[in-house]
Image (cartoon, rainbow, N blue to C red; front, side):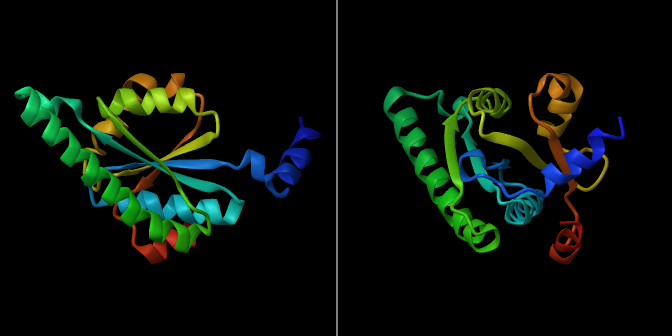
Length: 171
């Protein structure tokens, strides 16, 4: 067993091949702790030669109105989602040194996340920040109660109340 530890340690410090970049996925939502997860993912990507991916999910349930109104609302939500991920892309590039991968999808956020992880083999780590307090958030609760054992990638949970300086020290 001790023979495998040095090799694993050497591999952890080996240069990252550009075709096999480790992609850190961050779910973009409207919570304050999302920015903590994003900063953490950016710093980890920079330090490991990886890349950040941003996933913004538009909830399909919001458009159950008349067809024309629903289509207009869907278009407005898509435009807002595109604008948000584009705004977040600038700090991702500044911090990580890489242009992020951007995903925008419509549907149930939990299901979209699970499907994306299964369909995108380049995604190697999911980074989420837990809300300060007793409830870590709906996505973390969902994953840890039902799906954590079925995921093909590790999940990094970052305390959502960390300051930028604290995140910098952790990475």
